[in-house]
Amino acid sequence: MAYMIDGGGSSTFSKSKAWLYRHPESSFKLLDIITEVCINFLVEQVYAGAQMVQVFDSHAGILGPQMFSKFCLPSLAKIAKGVKERLGQSAVPMVVFAKGAHYAMEHLADTEFDVLGIDWTMDPRKARLAVKGKVLQGNLDPCALYSSTNDINERVKDMMTEFGLSKHIANLGHGIYPDISPDHMKSFLEAVHKYGQSP
Image (cartoon, rainbow, N blue to C red):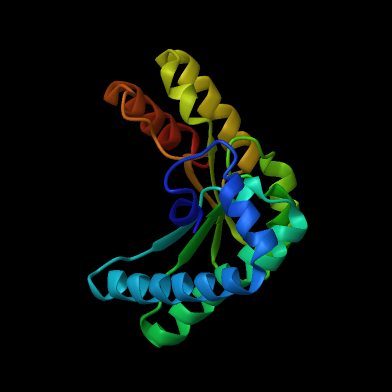
């Protein structure tokens, strides 16, 4: 919705936020359309062979807790519920990544998503307490991959320690940048395998 209204990327998405405040009913209608499109798309992804699907709300953090709960959370919950209902016994694990929505972890944990992704600004230990036993995914800062391979190794070690060895999918805290060295991504993956093993 943010890109539809703002017409592209933005540091504030002020046009989109203004639309939410000025036209809440129209916003709900648009979000319902987007929600149904997302459900259909994810179901088709599973039919095409996807073994896990992820829903990104990459700009969740531009909203405060009240606006997120009013406009985003219901749609995210509908997506998880709708996909699982449509797929039935063929349902696959679902991940939700609401970047910056640290204040909503407990509410996201109440949805039918199986895994909650967290960005690099969130403390894994605090997130663990909020998600009621669900799996966490994340959360190395993507920019950490610009550092040396030795530094990447140490940062991954710290990350794995903070998450613990169970109910964690090691990942970056957002997408990888196009100019990251493949060798540094390789170092990240090797460190995950190294420190993700039980002693």
